[in-house]
Image (cartoon, rainbow, N blue to C red; front, side, top):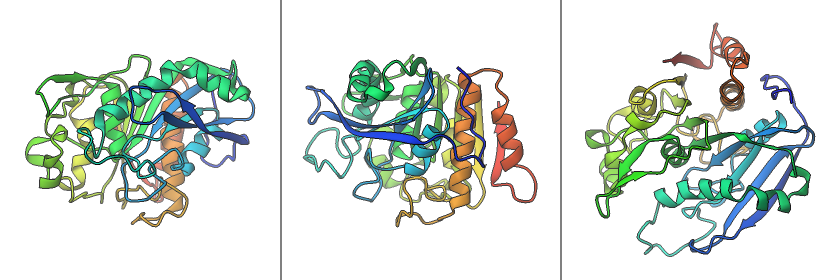
Length: 316
């Protein structure tokens, strides 16, 4: 198969989405539901697991969100699988659950469950049968979803309930993108973030899987950190290479509106920025999953240089 094309100015292939696909999960309060989006044509398609943020909206923090990203990546040759995590407002679960309200462990396990049940997903979406490249899997997460992605990529923490070390790294995932993800713990945290407990001990030193970290230079996230926008670069700064950091100019927490088309919660609405995030993240994943493909460098040259640059990129 030819690797997917991800030029920022191309429309791509028509996309077919199927939802909800229900994955039986008897050890979960409700079965896991996912949306799958894929191009109408192509074979040996790489997989992106897309983890939504916690968010304020009723539906964007679920399998129904992140259309600007999921549709772009699917149109350019990826199969995008989006779960509804237990923290989604669409589920209205019992707030007394000991893992509520953010369900940090369950979120990561959702992604492992998806990989375990790819046969079920193919059976529920027959147009996908035999078209997945199960050897090329990436994870992308925004905000709390970025924390989920970091754990799957190898970051660790200490369970605040019993003090045990937690390792949820998923070896079937070989690349990732962290979008406005939480940074380190300790003195960097606000009182609100500290109250969740698990943020205190996040350790990026074990996050060895290749990843792109995307941070907005105006994403101060005062409800979570006292360090300002630089906090969101911690997954890059505090982890070993190979890593890349994309710092977006004038971007706040929704990075221009990635969580949904015309989302009211976006404080920095900018369709060009959203398109750039989709193109750059997709290009990074393509060049990482297909070593030697030049699309990452070409996309960086097009979008992060010159007077109209959307941001800057560094790597290690």
